Length: 482
Ligand code: BGC
Image (cartoon, rainbow, N blue to C red; front, side, top):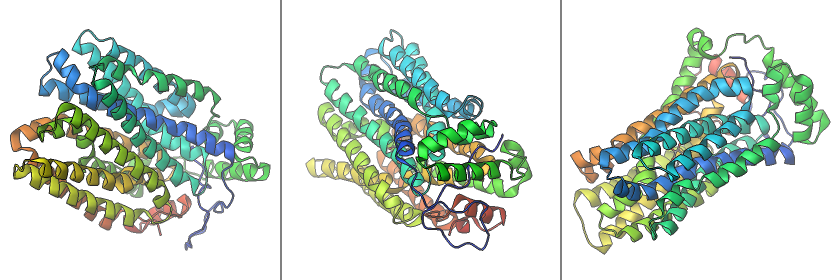
């Protein structure tokens, strides 16, 4: 796998490091065109989230119309993750060969096709096929968008923009819940699942206006095109030329080995890949998607009426989205580690409360409202840290030569665990009860906190070159940042 990423990009306030960086940390802003292009790419997050939110509301109706039991419903939810697993696997190869822009455009087409299949389904198999195609597209988006964004932006904007992708994912979930809540009254589940066709078509059109990734162009030896794109993105010729020099430097830095070969050859790359996978596995073990996918079911189980459950679910989505907006601000100010540790503690406590309410079979308005409050606090805890930071960290910790491969591995882990958790949740609740299930997730969040304390580096304002050099020098993972 050819190294495609520039190493120059990141930092407005350089962090002192004993090791000289090949390209000086960058002090100039990324340019309005670069930010616009990154924001357009981040809209892919909206599409990813929309499909998550819509299925939560549509599931009950589909189950009813197709006489689908708990197991079949689990499959309707989780077949998307199998598609996403394959999509994120294939996206690395596809986007390296054909470019990020084409990968994203293809994903929007697949989402449109999948949504149409679901909306017109006469058999449950058609829904499964449609959800599978949407899954492939989502896998492509979650691999491609964060990488593409980081190639289009520079400096501090990088963390902010990747977090924007994550925040828009939360907004997409909220939109899905809202549309679901509005359409639930008339039982219009076909309209619900067909809705992503509209934003998919808009993003498809927007993809035509996006520039090719300068790093990708340079990696293919198309330096003059890369220079043109960079000048356009940064709006500053000298800065663009300097950046291109850095990209060329990284590409020619003698890192002939990349991807899987690098994994076999370099223990330090095995450690960063393992950290990325660990972060994504822990993110899913927080239990976030149990709430995201099954919130209406959890609330109905707690004696909410169907409509009340639908609106309480909208509230869950709202909190997730609003906190996601706040997280964009906090990510570049608090630092990764304190935010992630606080996030885990909040999630563990909230799920502990939910476990008590469910486990003690408390009933009545007080208990029901407390359950909703616990779920809201949990989602807020996730949205302020574990949600945006895991994606940000995963795109920061991999060395340039292996970044595509490393991010593909961690994205794969995200979807694999998402599948495992959402495909077993209803079965586990039926076997153990909701109380013990929530208690289990609460313990997982304590585990995530320990994982963070022991292994997660503080990467805020640290140039990627410095992270890479610390990693290569064999420093403990926790110390590869500052
Ligand atoms: C996670 C998704 C989750 C979403 C909720 C993302 O960071 O990776 O699995 O559905 O957050 O907002």
